[in-house]
Length: 165
Image (cartoon, rainbow, N blue to C red; front, side, top):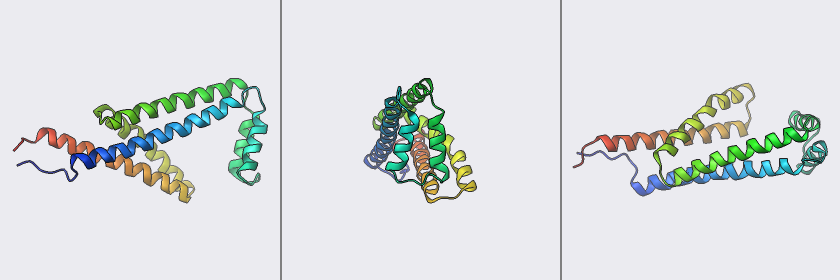
């Protein structure tokens, strides 16, 4: 007798497609950041950083805006191009992963488990050292996605080894 994995094929595909959309969204966000970084080449990165802090109404005396301003003052065009290149590579990886998940490819499922799982210890470390709601949400979302994908793969591998009725 064949056991059910708890999710029918349509629900499983829908779940993978939600994860694919999430990964593609991360790729789009990082690509936009990379384009923003490249747009300040040959311009003052410090001025752009200060304008961003002001636009977002951030307090210059708080830690994160200070880090942004400090980093912007020490970036030259070569480093800006490097950051933009890294953003491009990262977004390309997210887009490839999203495509593979959308097409329900085995390699993409494993890749998503590994790439999401790598961040979990770092996110947990950050949360333990400085608890914020945002860090908790990021950890929970990432852990939920990894858990879903592990369950998905587990169910798929059980289906392939169980004899058909």
